[in-house]
Structure formats: C-alpha cells, structure tokens
Amino acid sequence: MSSFNICLNNSSLKSSYNNLNPNRFFNTDPQKVSFRTTRTITCHSVDVKAPNVGISAVNELGKKSKDVIEDEGRFLVGTYARAPVVLEKGEGCKVYDVEGKEYLDLCAGIAVNALGHGDSDWLKAVVDQAAILTHVSNVFHTLPQVELAKRLVTSSFADRVFFSNSGTEANEAAIKFSRKYQKHTSTNGKVPATEFVAFSNCFHGRTLGALALTSKVQYRTPFEPVMPGVTFLEYGNAEAAVELIRQGKIAAVFVEPIQGEGGIYSATKEFLQALRSACDDAGALLVFDEVQCGLGRTGFLWAHEAYGIFPDIMTLAKPLAGGLPIGAVLVTERVASAINYGDHGSTFAGNPLVCSAALAVLEKISKPAFLSAVAEKGLYFKELLKQKLGGNHHVKEIRGFGLIIGIDLDVPASPVVDACRNSGLLVLTAGKGNVVRIVPPLIITQQEIEQAVDILSQTLPVLDQNNQK
Image (cartoon, rainbow, N blue to C red; front, side, top):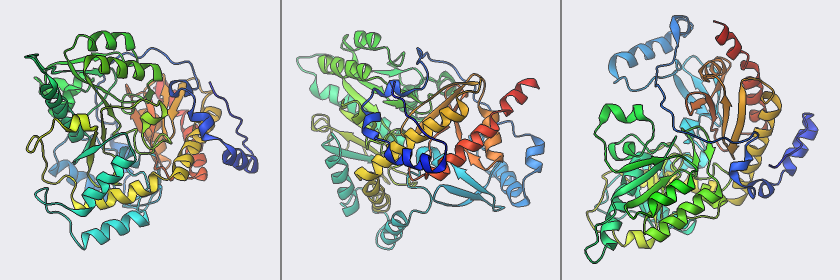
C-alpha cells in the first residue's frame, strides 16, 4: 500500500499537491489503493426505494421547485426516485436550482460531465456543428463520425468503432457482436458458443440484453424472462471464471475494470490477466465495460491501461460527448471481420452533432497533462478524505482510482447524501446503498475538493442522529 504525506497548512498543502507523482501512485496494483484491507466481495440483492424526502423537505422548497416537482409527478412515468432539487443551470463544477441556490456537483450527471458544465470549447463545437448539419442518419457518410472513429482507434487497442446512443446500447451491440463472432469462427460443424459470464455487483444496463448481464436481481425480476445463458460469478474469483470459460460454451466475458454502481471496486491485475488468458485459450471474447470508469476518470485515458491488459471489445458512453447521448463499441479487426452490413444499426447514433461534441471532449481529456492532473487530484481527494473522515466509526473504507471514489459505510448512505445536498454538495450512492459515490467533473479544483471534504466531514454526524431515531 502506498502512503503519502499531505499537510493541512494551505501553503504546504499546495506544495505537497503539486509534487505528487501520479506514476508512483498508478504503477501500484489498483486493487491495493484502498486505505483499508480489501474484503471478499459477494453479490447482494438491494431494495430500490424512493428517497425519504418527507413533507417538511418539500415544504422547504421554493414555489418554482414545488411547481416543477408537482408537474413531474403528473406527467412523467414514475421510473426515477428524484432528489427534491430542480436544477436550472451550471458552470464548471457548480450547478444552480431554480431558486438560485448553488451546489458543488460531485455527480457530474453520473460521471458524464467530465469537462463540467458549459465548457467553452465543447459549447463552440456544438453550436458550430448545429449551424451546419445536425443529423442525416447512417445512410450517408459524415465527417465528424469518421474523424471521431479515427481518434478513438488511434488512442486505443481497437481497429474499428461502432456508435450507439448510450451505454446500455453499446453493451447490447457487444452482445450481438460476440454471438456473431462465435458463429463466424465456428468450423467443422462445431456448435457456436452463445453464453456469457458477468460478475457480482456488476451493472451493464437496463435494456433486456444488458439487463440480463446485470447482477442485481430486483432489476431483472420484473422483466423476466430476460436473455438466458448468463452466469454470474464472484467479482475477483479468477479460479471459478477460468474453470467456466474453459468449458468452451462462453461467447464473451463482460467485466468492469472498476465497478461504479456496484460500489467502486477495482479488479486486480491477476484477475483480469486470468480472464484474458482463459478467453484466449477457449476462443471467448473479453469485453471491458468502461462506460463509467473510462475516458480519463482513473487518470488513464482507458481504465484498463493501468493493468496493461487489453480486451477484444470495449464499451464506452457516459462522458464521451460531454452530456449529449452517445455510446461506442471499440473492437479489434478480428471481431469486426465477423460483422456484415445489416447486422446492427441505429438511426441516431454517431450523428454529426454528438460526434463534434465528442471530438471536443476527447481532444481535452486525452492530453497527458490533463490525465496527470486527474491522477493527482484523485490521490489528493482520497488522502484528504482519509484524514478527515477515516476516523469516523461508520467509515469502513475509502477506496477508488483517480476521480471515481467510494466511501464505504456500515449504515445506509442516504442520510449523508441528503445532508450534503442541504449543505450545497451533490453526491451519489452506490453498492448496497451504503457507499457514497464521488464522480466529479474531471476539472474539479483543489479548492473545490477541500470544500467537498469539509461538507462531507460536517455531515457525517447525521448518521448517528439517524440511528438514534
């Protein structure tokens, strides 16, 4: 385990922060970056409930917010348990509600707004492209789509790209490509492999194929039967995975190098290497889902680069277009050779507007100085959290990689999330509802990190107050 000395004196703090070496940090095994001993991870069922807002909280809202929330309840399908906040605008890492209250945003649209809100280069790219050409479908060639594909290929393991509109769509495409690849490569009358492996605490999406690969039972049960042929194994259990893959029935293994919704758990290099070797031996494909952990969030452009292990397919989405809907499936030529005209498609995917936005995002995030800064800020964030929160008896572990961070509690995290929101800080939950998930814009400043940790520290006592009720 690496250790770092961060001084709390402002001048010393700045000096320590500026002198942090991200390479020294990220050359360690990502699984060992946690500040407490890691544990065996098992798959748990989680009840999904609406937040306990209460009448008093609603009464504290301004009239504009009340009106919008009331209309939402009347006109929208009730699929979201929304927080009682009506956001109107944002700038950088700050967002503002309709009454003008300011919030420090550590949600970033669930790890989407990597460049924050209103980035000038992103805005220029969107406005300029909207004035020229927004959408024509994939019946025709367009410049931004081809340019974005070239940029993604030259900056990754991949040889080709397929565009979609979201992360779940990207994983649906990866499912289809894996099945088609197995049919394409099966010879001498051999029955193609059609099954899949996924892991405990995983999340791959909510459409029926991706949902079948998502471990939370309560997400799948209302919509069964979902796609058959998926086996869930313990995340990190290389022995069980290798044994199953070697049976020759697995078309592809889906794994997140770092689990986001599952609770901010990092794979070990040994685990990913075992999957890579077993897939190679059995002819299965290895799919890395980097929808949440990819595109700079770890301090590497791609999360798997920290391990030096590369997939056959990688799925991307959240931050790629800076808030506009996009997904991408990056594949090797070996996989792409199995895909023919008409095997898959999308009306909206990869249109000129979203691809121009994505080019602006990728241009900034892929710069070495930007990635180095993310690594340093993540390191500093975790150290400060450890110093100010680590002594609290409810804090079991502070873990993460770059700017995807989890505070694991021994009680539900929702009281802290609510208290933070009331204090002007927006954070998320993860795992079994007991993890505070921190996924801020990658442009977050040192001052904003300190502000966030101060608020988190001040709100932790609410956990004891809640338990006494």
